[in-house]
Image 1: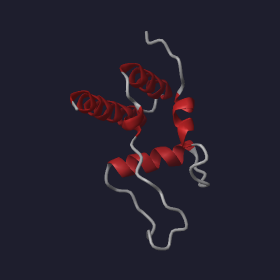
Image 2: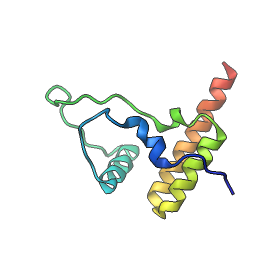
Image 3: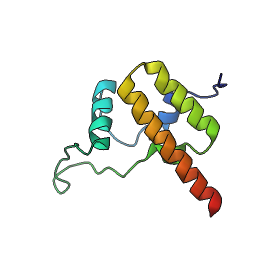
Image 4: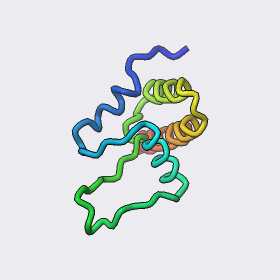
Length: 103
């Protein structure tokens, strides 16, 4: 069993105050799923009042412990789509971590 030192809430807390947009968890899950599937719809960037910067959660998962906690929290949701998305993020994080170690 993985020793948990943090929660998904503290992990996602790094985004606090970065935007004024409010979304439900379901809306965020739908947006994430659509984005990964290449089906996301975006507002016209020239007229949108808010600008978003690219964010990849894999960049914040820099240790195996971070990844284990992230996957454990995803598994606890029982949401198969979210779990599959978290697994893809974990794979990408491990790849990025190996790349960092090389250079």
